[in-house]
Length: 166
Image (cartoon, rainbow, N blue to C red; front, side, top):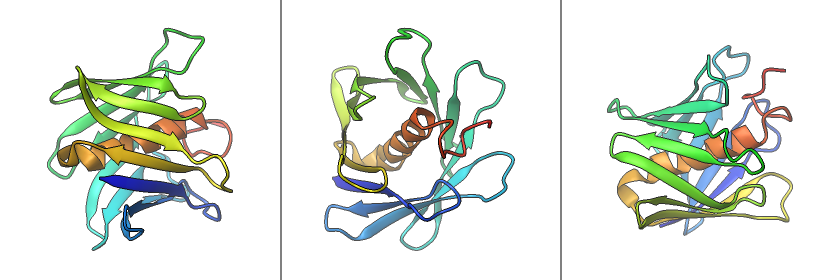
C-alpha cells in the first residue's frame, strides 16, 4: 500500500492530509489550536478517530505516544546515541522497530527484525513537507503513518511544529 502524506501549509496547527495510492483522501491528521498537550488526532474518511498522537512529557529527549482506539500504544522516541545523526526507537506491543536510513534527508526504512514494514521518501520540491510512504504491513498502516508524522514533528521541533516548547 502506498500513501502520500502532505502537511497543510495554511494551517495554524500541525495538520496533514494522507492520500492513498489512487490519490483519494484516506486519512486526515488534525492538531488542536491552543492545546497545552500539543496532541493530534488521525481520522479516517468517515471522520472516525483512528489514532491519537500525544506528546510525552518529562523525558530528556522528544517522545510521542501513538494511541489506537483499542488501547494499543506505540512509543516513538528520539535516541540520544549516536548524537551525530538522527536516530529513533519505536516500542510497540509486538516488540521494537528499527528505523534506518538518512533521516535528515528523510529517506528511511522502518523494520522489525529482518522484516521491512515501511519505506519513506520525502518529496524535495514541494511548498510543504510531503512524504511518500510504502507500507508492507497493512495491519499496522495507521501506526506506521503516525510514526512518520511524529518523526517529522521531532525533526522540525523549534521551527513551526507544535512539538516545540518555544
